[in-house]
Amino acid sequence: MPPRLSKSKYTAGLQCHRLLWWKVHEPRAPELTPGASLQALFDMGTRVGERARQEFPGATLIDLDYRRPHHAVEATRQAIEEGASVILEASFFEDNIFVAVDVLSKEPEGWVVTEVKATKSVKEQHYADAAVQTQVVERAGLPVTRVELMHLNGEHRHPDQGPLFIRADITAEVAALRDGIPVHAAAQVRMLAGELPDVAPGPHCSSPYACPFFARCNEPAPDHAIEELNGIRANALDELREHGIESIEQIPSDFPLKPLHARHRAALLQNDVVIEPGLQRVLSAYRYPIAMLDFETVGPALPVWEGCSPMSPVPAQFSVHTLDENGGVTHSAYLAEGQGDPRPAVAQAVAKALDGAATILAWHASVEKRCLADLAAASPEHAPALLEAHDKTQDLLVVVKNHFYHPDFRGSFSIKNVIPALLPELAYDDFDVADGMAASNLLERVLCRPDELSEKHCADLQAQLRAYCEHDTAVMVSLFRFLQDLAAS
View (cartoon, rainbow, N blue to C red):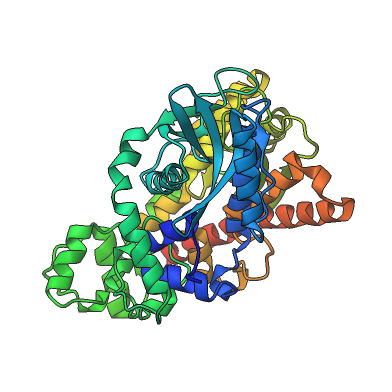
């Protein structure tokens, strides 16, 4: 029997035949085991799909077990014969392709295929997904008159301001892809019957999705490759490649570089840090007490608090380390608990924590400034203090980016890269929470789905969140002192 395709395998094959070959022939490859963040995205998609079903009351739900797809195909056939007008997970197998349609609806002129996505807009990669489903449904003998992409509505405000979902008509975009489906599917089946195909690496390695097998096909980049230059434009990279330049050290001195890129090159050539004049002036302009601020947010795809929209980030945790002129440091923090709206308590606590601070510093301060503004809008009682704090907030990342470079930054100004280079003893290696995305995912579990956690597990996650957020501002204090010493010397 030839390998069976599915809509996910078919779209993987459109991206790259090697990717599809490994998915089929090495389904248990370690690269295919999703990490915590990717698994959180999958789980979110499942929850959005389940919520979307509520928009179709009275629909017939097919019991889909991917280990026995033929049972779902037979159940779908029976549902159609019995006159079901809306079928969820409608399953079909034609031309060696299995698909399960999120929603299949009967209308007088024919059938409507509705694909549900946990996004706030239609994306180009969605068309191929819907097209292969439409093709298989029609090959099963059902005329499809319309194809829809059902996605979250970014204008929705919980609980009932505007619809939660938007159904976009993508019939024309799908029709443009239909003729190519039999050709692509046949080529994929032939390819899967043979050895691993030879496909050269290229842009498809990361588009439309990052390939989990990237390392198998691509040679490791040279040390300090030109791609490390922070924010460099594609045309500049192409120009460098045309001259045979692969690493930053090879860039000639007369090649026009932006100041940041020139600093990067100089640091590598000197194998030392580069400090720009003006660092001490910028740091000495900050008035004490100086508060180091970091928020963690939660953005459930299905909003649960009044006035929130899908995936809108809601501040649910913060840490503040305050440095006084004599070198003393105090710490304040807050982590929301329970399923109620976290914003009122967070607003009150952060307003108190920042009271008296003359300067507020954050890393990537646009996030903290947005959080302060959102809290002010949600908590009028504390709005004056929060808006004042908003106006005092400045970006320590920009200070480093404009005045300092270390060879080990490797083009990244994430604090997770900066700290190991400058203060390795304060790196994040021993933390269970790896980054802000992981923190957001844990907050979503603790605040929105606590029933899924035991009391001990919930307490463990809360301890991890507190430790991670506190460390974010503690390292900013150490980094600030490091920069002061550097500038003074």
